[in-house]
Image (tube, rainbow, N blue to C red; front, side):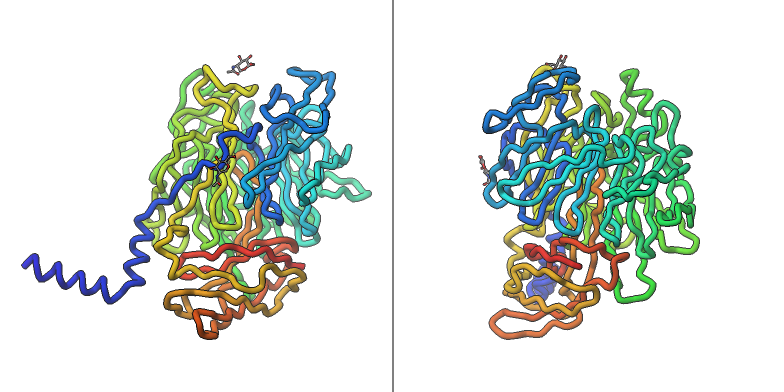
Length: 545
Ligand SMILES: *[C@@H]1O[C@H](CO)[C@@H](O)[C@H](O)[C@H]1NC(C)=O
Ligand SMILES: *[C@@H]1O[C@H](CO)[C@@H](O)[C@H](O)[C@H]1NC(C)=O
């Protein structure tokens, strides 16, 4: 009987080429590529800008980096504990297309800070440590631009805070060490800090476990704030908590130093009056891990994710188990709506020297698959990416990976996890050449600005293989500010398509409608992708206003 069955299955495969390709996509595991052995600094904070350059920085009191500042410039800081005169850079700009970087100069300490790209496309960074804790810094995307600093740009010192861009174009900056409040940037003339008792309530004695809170703008305009093991929905205009979410079952902490990560899952059905929003929180460290790590005992990280529909009237967490336990991982939204969980450790916590057992394999999470079938382990890297590592989606669909420095200084020898100055790229399986017949190529426009809310758009693509109208979707991604395992302001909108029109010669017009409001998508620069059967095009930069 064996032979006929074999022949029969071959026939099925031959007659359904698309399905066969999809099945092999599920089994594939991505590729790693070393981009730069050393960019001279450790990429602790990274942000992709609209010119396809990635701005990165570490800290100014690490000692001397391996990247000299050009033109004889130096930082002079009497109070710096390590070097009083530092002629090396602690920030750099990596040009993705040219595969080259150049030194930038931060004037004050940007360590463990936060930021976001605001609607005009500038990166606005906030806070840091020591002389930098109340500074706001602006970086405009241009090939000769450098950091501009605004003294006292923040109302209070912010270290380990989280930021989000708001529909009115300002940023909200939430929390930070010993700051149980939030503020807006740019500052308004009136009192600028607003108390948030939730942050003191979730602050574990001596350990915190609520720094770098996970914040997302909900589709109703309120701010979802997750800290430690639970969340609230905040009307930030009225400074009023409008909803309190349950504690994640088990109650283990998910925020710094028990660092897990979180994403707002792709927003769909955007034309509906009742668009739903879901948040996924993954990894972290069991209660007590930080204290144990300080005694040299490294407890296994959490292997659970918790998912909640934040727009529900009675929201409940649904628990899922990851194939690998992880603390200090990132969750990166890919153009096709899947989530890449990457970097981090299998035990211990964040903070100096407290992580062990690097997790070298990324894991893919497919939010639309059936529960129990959502995770897929990907091919491993060879470079541990521990505390102070980063990951960021690029326009071509690769994920840039850099940083990792669990030490007080730059330490390259004689330590468990040497300071990493390298950059790698992870190419998810969707970039494999075998999917080229499915892959859309955007022919026109090359970029788009001035897109209005609800505007009808046409994107022209080339697709070599067969196309089915219901398998083509347009997505938009807001490139986040990535640090300490949280990607601030990360957002993916699934626009779908209104119509696909064949133009002949493998060309198609895709009609699509821009998001309808600033609560769905704040104004600013997004990467727009066309996706067919989970295979994305390269993105184009578009500006929503
Ligand atoms: C990028 O440049 C480095 C040297 O600066 C080189 O080793 C590497 O192969 C290049 N990578 C790519 C993908 O071009
Ligand atoms: C790292 O480097 C500094 C300065 O070179 C040194 O003092 C320190 O002991 C090293 N080790 C660690 C774990 O930071």
